[in-house]
Amino acid sequence: MKLDIFDLPPVAANAPDVIRIDHLFKRFVLRHTRSMKEAFIWLVKGRKGDLSEKFNALNDVTMNIRQGERVALLGYNGSGKSTLLKLISGVMQPDDGSVLTRGRIAGLIEVGAGFHPDLTGRDNVFMNAAILGMEKEQIEAKFDEIVAFSEIGDFIDTEVKFYSSGMYLRLAFAVAIHTDPEIFLVDEILAVGDEPFQRKCLAKIKELCARGKTLVVVSHDLDLVSQICDRGVVLERGAVKFDGEAMEAVDVMRDLPFGTTKRNRYEGDLLAAQQKLETMEVSRRELMQAIESGSTETVVVALADIAEDSQAEIDAMSNEQKLEIVNSEITRLEKKRERLHQLNA
Ligand SMILES: Nc1ncnc2c1ncn2[C@@H]1O[C@H](COP(=O)(O)OP(=O)(O)O)[C@@H](O)[C@H]1O
Ligand SMILES: [Mg+2]
Image (cartoon, rainbow, N blue to C red; front, top):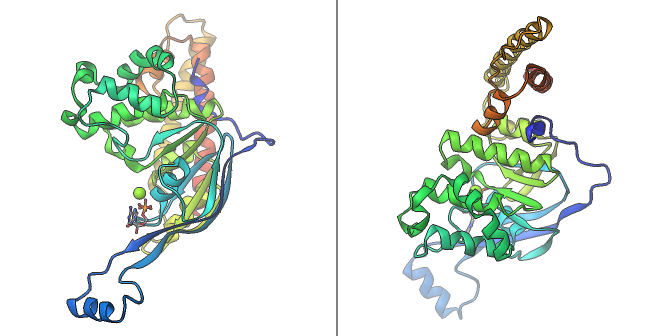
């Protein structure tokens, strides 16, 4: 039963660090277009100085992430979020400082990174999963599940250069999530997918979290952050501006320059939570009546933000089991509403 997804476990008090980031710097070259004259002067002066300027995409970032933590990385475009994920994943090396990680890392940082255009989806699954540290037998065992999740169908034997960006994304996510990583990294890239697929991914990510795995996700989606993340880190020009409670981080983010005004900015989220809560309370009443009257008719309970297969599982449950789920969902929504109220005040 994978329905404990609604209440993700708190991080164990003695959870070890799985990511240690120590005084991390990443510099990129900022190329200026110089005039011929400037370039000439630079040459005759014996190439003193540099025509290009370096800037810190990551500027002295230090943080530890413990096993089972679910961290949201926030910040405006260019603040260094993707660079940080790349350094954690090891596809990029730091210029200074260090990143230490423990356990298998997988995730979605760049769509199709690690996919070879001339190979078929099938061959890419094997190659990609092998890169992520899986044995051939393990991949074979999971292959059908991966293809089913990706919804690629018969295209699995087509070269991936003919895939749409959505197909690329679905296959890449399917491989990454099925490698059973200890640490899962997700960049905004998920926003590329369509809505039903996003929900499916979200359900998978929650499953991973429910099993105590570590998540680092770049997202501005308040709902996603509040449902999954327990910690938020705001980056500003490559430096950590805030590191703390996830919802507070969202708040800090909204207060950064060119943020919206503080007043009423959670009104929409609050309204949505309130509506979901009311629906759940109706379901609760119906369920309790059905249980009390000993009715064998099952009450239909539809949960928002849930993947189709999880919904199918709920449909198959008894009224008592449904009531349990509805109660936990109500508790979650009440907590969320409370939090939004505070933020809105
Ligand atoms: N490979 C690269 N070469 C040069 N500059 C880069 C490279 N990757 C990122 N940058 C620059 O580093 C800064 C941080 O980028 P990035 O980590 O992608 O930010 P974010 O993901 O927060 O939008 C940006 O100014 C970006 O232009
Ligand atoms: Mg980015």
